[in-house]
Length: 436
Image (tube, rainbow, N blue to C red; front, side):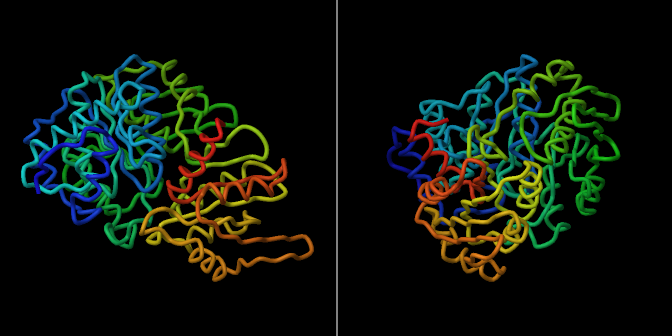
């Protein structure tokens, strides 16, 4: 239904968009493509689309940091946001203003006619139109869900990156890596560069790339990395980059992500040349909140939006690499449709005290539901010789975090993980306290 009058504020638009379409997720490109054409959205600069189960945000952030160091004007679209919607659209390193977004929302509404769009589809089109009008040298677009039928895929990427393929969103993408790999490979295009950073790519992804005639770059075959504790080296088809410092983003998988980034830049070197020092500086300065983000001070506080088993396994490895902490407190909340059993399986041996939280969405798992999942995994409150375990439930991430912080010693560790809403709730609480 066409709106009779437009909201005048960003919050007004976002509230309205949440109710405009009967489904929160409605996979398919026909409606989005129709409105995109009406809006005349097109890009004259290189477009990089980034998909994958995990690692998308880190990959986008590294691409952005390196290209900006090289002097390029870059637009980056990511989702979801942690605190402010504006985080989803960055133009030359700065979040889009409320006014800029409101103007683009009005333009989409004017052109969509009787085409019904979801919140994600509507906002994606608005941000794409903003980028198309911003005189950019490069555009980086993160896939929201899957790839083949995601709204971002109405754009033909010059380079498409699939970071990793694992089990998530099974109700939309399928319940095997082969099915999910095919969906993610849908962002590849004939004759254009298709990069897969997963060391063990599904055969379905490889087969689809070959079937459409994409130029497929595989980790371990077309590009790779090597290194030691001090530095690392990238090797591609025709380009080497040596003596690189580790990315500022912490975590075991960041060299895989960084290698895919450098493969993309190698593929675009004729259109977007980037020097060695610009790569080093970009990797040193890259910043992405909520991805194994270790806050300064004591006790150690880790923020990580690990919300599926693949990400939980990486978080577990990263926690192991942090060194000894007498006790680890977990602030954990998740969506009901996530593999909560799989997440718990990877982290149950690393956590002593569980602070479980409700989340402010209907599809969120309740803290009590997660408590029962912990019990199923053998995690119950106990006090034994050499072992202490507690499990408590809270109404909000802020209260769960405050409880953990009140009990943790200065040498202990607090890991905040799960849904974006879990991490965002703690970040907002800390911001309200005036902390950084």
